[in-house]
Length: 249
Image (cartoon, rainbow, N blue to C red; front, side, top):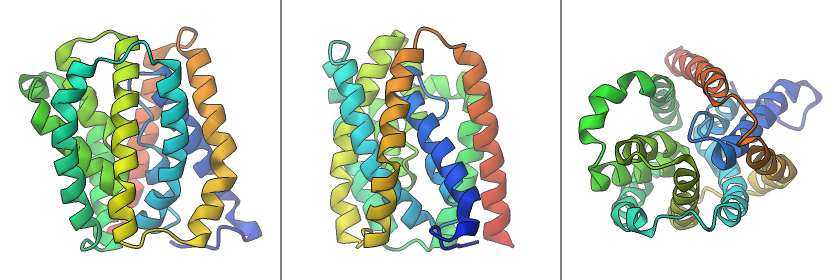
């Protein structure tokens, strides 16, 4: 279902989008995962996946800058050296797929990944045996991040295997995604993902993105992280089911 997002009847799109962007900002700056992949799936219920991803990317740049500054003293450069070279390869692969995979297929892939990522904590015991393979998880994060801004779960699995503390986790993840999200501008430009409509929606949502990050930093020591993650994963799983339904029917 595609709609005119500036029509008066588009309020469900704006409501879900604001919730998705807000929770993404909170997750990136205050929680180790949880809601970091919600924005695109919720937008994609109303817009083509490539457009939803393009709208989200400038918002992620703002979130990354604020989060990196907030956790600048907790970045593990050693872990970044393990992850970033593979992520660059993943971004290149994702960029090639970005120009060839149809919107319907991307919607189906996003729905499937949303469900898998919503359940990833239950898969941790199985995935943990590969958790120290930085090249694998870094590369996978690069691919999924380029296509769908869904690089958080692969990175989280890797960091879980390293048993890093929460602040180091947030600082390292913020720096990793600051680097990869900037690099993603290259395939997005080559594949003509930018449009005047996309930039207008992104600019409108910038205050929401900023507030989400500020709120996340403030809530980092005040919120029940497990409850937040359960709610976020439930929303992600539901969005995934709806996306798969729409892609098939």
